[in-house]
Image 1 (cartoon, one colour):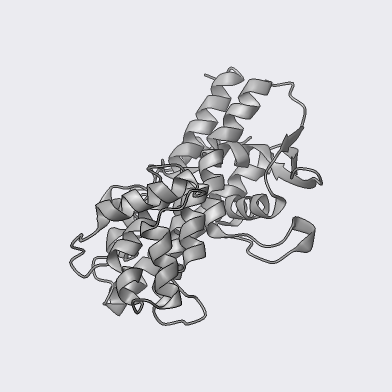
Image 2 (image 1 turned 90 degrees about the vertical axis):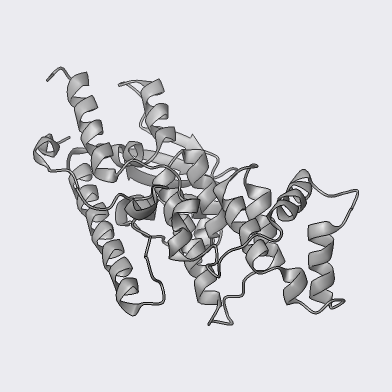
Amino acid sequence: MSIDGFQRRRSRGYRIGTREGPECYFCAKDTSSKGKLRDVQKIKAIFAEKHRAITAQVIIYSETVEVFAGTEQKQTFVVHKDLLTLHSTYFSNLFSDKGLDMDKKISITVKPSLFADFVSWIYMGKFLKVENNALEGGTAVNKLWELGRFFRAPAFQNFCMDDCRNYRKASETDPEQPWQFIEGIELMYSLTPPGSLLRSLAVQSLSYKNPLQENEKGSPDWKKWKSLLTGTRPDDDIWVKELQRDFALEAGKDWDEIPPWDDQRSGDYMEEATPLEERWDAQILALVADIGFL
């Protein structure tokens, strides 16, 4: 591990992935302005480059560990230990519990294709997102967001949330990316616990664009939405009742013509996350203290 981090200056610009409004790098004051949109894209590019630059510093002296992901058939990932602990409190606690003499092989019951996207993000700041039979198929960003919650990796959750919002924005002009659809809402609710920000985005999207009003009354699609959002079925899971309750609470909300997926509202769906450079500095300080330099 290098201690060059002591000499690095911390970023004084936008913070990554917070819910503090203007400091969130996803935000844009006027999404109808091409200039503002270019500014958002430029800021994202800057932070993606910072992500990769810090990754390069982390892996220079970090040891690697073997992570076996899956249930019955495991897939092996060789990952830099310090990169895992930098981005995930789950792994940080796991390695701390095992101590300095820990086995360099760990096993997790996470679908390999999901873990592959997480590994791609911690290294490159982007998803892998490819269909791969060897990794048990493709992935869905909703599942990745929930994986981030399990790994206690809020910056990764925010990256997933931004991908969700971008998909929704693209669906307005791209018929091949339909939204909203029942399967997507069901997935967002069934995967996550009450109060999750992914659920908030799902139900508030329904509030902004109510499918019971968007679809012709009595049509097959209207009947499906009616059954999901207001119906009573004895075999419904608890999350269905929670969706119906949340949908009723959000009914009639005034959105001032700014949809939930708009960049101006992005801070409403962002988890609290310490900037990456600050986490890296803290990790270096902790390591140096452990080996007796301080």
